[in-house]
Image 1 (cartoon, rainbow, N blue to C red):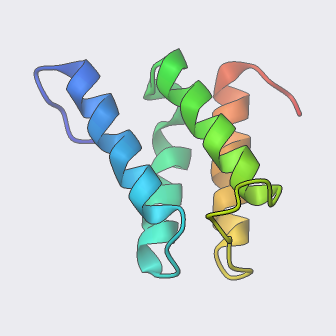
Image 2 (image 1 turned 180 degrees about the vertical axis):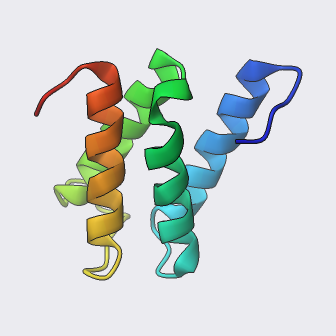
Length: 91
């Protein structure tokens, strides 16, 4: 993960990258999802909670603006599982 002097800015920038990638149907989805899996424990509780909420809604089809492709679904599901595990949630 890139390191900025301001950790809060780093978290915000990553969240923006996640939100950009989530509705896309390109290789960036897998890149961002793999980054989440590799760094899930390093995100702040706040950032983890935001991504878990947004990703959960998208995967459950409850976000009317986001459709997760079947190709990207496994990557996003792995990312969600990693975030939940890092947060101590065993769902």
